[in-house]
Image (cartoon, rainbow, N blue to C red; front, side):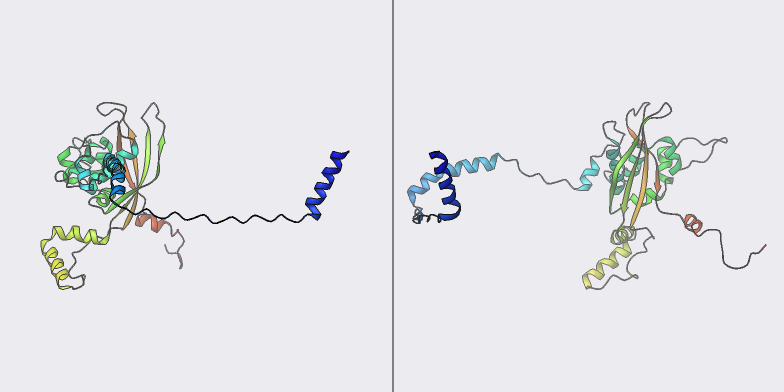
Length: 278
């Protein structure tokens, strides 16, 4: 009974009657004064300085990234089974972006090796022999290969893979199939510079205008083809199951996503204004 009364009295006192106890005032602590840096302190700090220096020297130095042209020199010329489908597309696109490294038309030559025989025929259809269409040789491919994707990727400003590749399982008829979407960018300045390199007179006129501070007018700039600034293509690849490139991804076709004039005309429909005519 006494414990309950004391508990009730303590609760009543703390909740209603008792005033808060004053908080004792804390005396301010003295601020430590800086120790003067003299000769003894310097000798004491020498071990820490040597330790810090050894740690900095132990860290690996930052290696600058090699330039893109140097990277083009290291690209494999023949198909490599250790590369996945995205890496195979990058090898072909980077080689075409820097087509002249390590030698002239190295990118187109690499593309020839990384394509299926059917894909080579689509880019460079050979003349029929005895009523049949035969394979494509390298010399013929280098001279006659052409297409929308090849023209956009050759000496392009840059390219970019869009999204993840779509891979379909293999069947009894073929190996794995994959599609990769690629955006190719061609800046107007890069196109003009590429065209000027083919015309030394235009290149000299551009340099003279830059030295004189004159604007680059259409009369000075070389004629540039009407190439789109951004073009999108779908690369269709197949994983080989037969020698000599077992397991490697080869390009079958690069289809442009841009609509052709015929497709744009077809979107207009079949209804025309005016009376029908025979």
